[in-house]
Length: 346
Image (cartoon, rainbow, N blue to C red; front, side):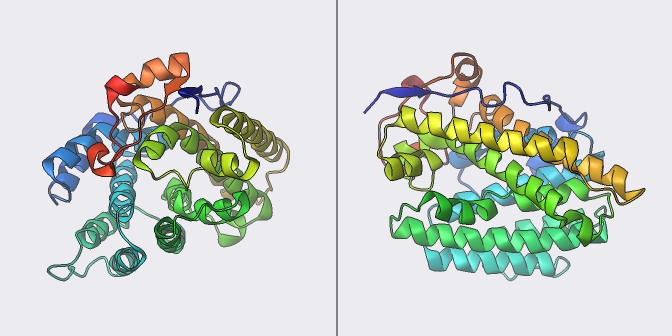
């Protein structure tokens, strides 16, 4: 096996630049303090979690949100990644219970959660209780719908993980499009909008959403592959799946993923530049902002992967510059923790 691989610059020609919300520092402090108050993790795990800087992810993803709606974005990242961390080490039945809890919390945000329940329920309830104060009715409806699909896809992932199943490429995308979390993330783009269902579900807009999601998946899997293979949790990564299905090595797989990303990029830009439907104002202006947000999230995921410490430790900027990733040795997941990286091995 090769001792490493190069990360291609998949967004070298992507039209969306890096943008940061001006409320990043203030809201990060408030959202982080709120999340830490639940003591959902051990001290060591919380430190690793903080180094991921999920508020930075939200700041890149919602650069034009006002302070209150940006807080919703920051809190959402905590909800998503809390669920992600707990579900990654749970079996199907346990994840199903978690999914039921978070959905009940979303549907009943003013009802305190039962004592002794998994902490994710109360985190989700408080998140949504605050969020709905500044979220339009259409965005609330779509958020709950899409979060439900996300939660169930995480259950499906737990089943495959337990069975050590490596899906086909087609199977992977069918599930991953939900559990990557972009659908509820995209719903937060429209918090102050009143986009009718026929607009968001127009074939061209839905296709843009799928294309953006697939590009996020590919970029995320390239960035996260090293830490996942070290944890023995890479069966749900497109690099492993392409290697397995095509019987090629890491570098060959990365090359194929890069080419597919470029194909998706071309399709996205064709629709974005030529096929956005018109509905009349004020819908058209809001739709333009929404579609801009979809394109921006493709940039966001790539940028955050290097700026946070989730995948490359303190060597993110160096990795972004050199594009070289040295494979980490395989070891017990408990020794790595929640996506922690041993910087000395990079």
